[in-house]
Length: 444
Image 1 (tube, rainbow, N blue to C red):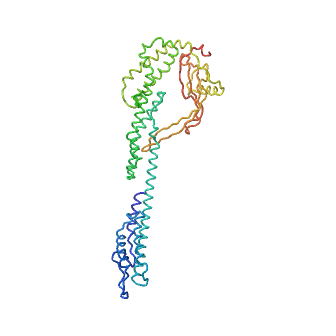
Image 2 (image 1 turned 60 degrees about the vertical axis):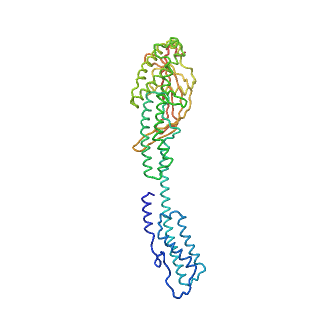
Image 3 (image 1 turned 135 degrees about the vertical axis):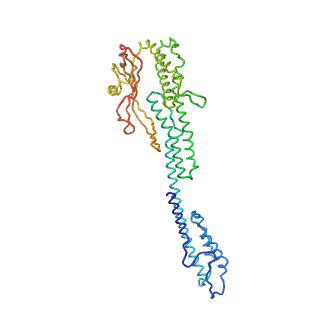
């Protein structure tokens, strides 16, 4: 029930109180007509009934229904009735004054019953209004709270920091940035609708979340991805900087020790680490430009050095190239090989000419919790779901440009996904172009 309806009922009830009895006004000083036939007075009436009559009449005349919503307050009238009934006990019912008192008490009790009924109606209306308010507030707070659990909220981006994933992450960050003001606006509307909840702990907690803690959590997520962040025991590098730090000790490119370029293990490590450092540096620059709109001279100067380092490592990898082989097969399943051939033949996979394919990671099953956010006008929509998929990996000797290279394909098939997100067919989830391999070594 809305407050307007509640107020209308209240005014209607107040206006209804006071309908007069035909014989009695039910007011202070009201007494029975003088009867000359009565030669004596009844002490209990004089000392107990009439004083209670006057007090009770005053109380009822001054009573406002809204002040007697609570049951215990209405009981005061019935206690007074009991006292007057007691005063009439043992009196002669044939006396005109006693008969008048009994009629007066009956009329008063009827008026009190009517008053109590109106108070009950008002109480029930108030209870319904309060219940509706509680339901509305709880539903709206539960909805806001369900979007974000401060204990598990996470907006940083884990590796790999590919250009596509970073672009998607930037889009999500912009969406998240728009949420706090909209969340605060919804809380303001809620308090406006239900002022009595202005100091509710849940509302205060959400106000603190949207006003301060969520923006801080977003900033921490950015720092954990492309910058440094507080670890509790100091400062640590985020994902991008951690990848860059792995190769800083071999910069600049022209100072890379010759022995490192001749050692297959070191070459393989650098061929793995340097692209990740390049990826991290590019990711940082992409976020600085497209999200923070800031220049980053230090890392703009670092990127060419990393690219030159990778070229230097590749150039010095000729010895490793001579000994390159496809990885050991972890499965010879004909079914998995048939799936791989079908997926690699799909133009969407962008696979080139191949001479040999091996399964270097057997089929596995994974599950992953996913979520997305969307803003539509004043509404915040958050969707969470669990995805499950099977995957395995193959390594192929594939022609890339003028060279034969070992190319790794992670093939995936979703067994559980949002409706419309997957056709549950096998596809290429990731393609990684690895090192070069001599053509005569492909079958070895």
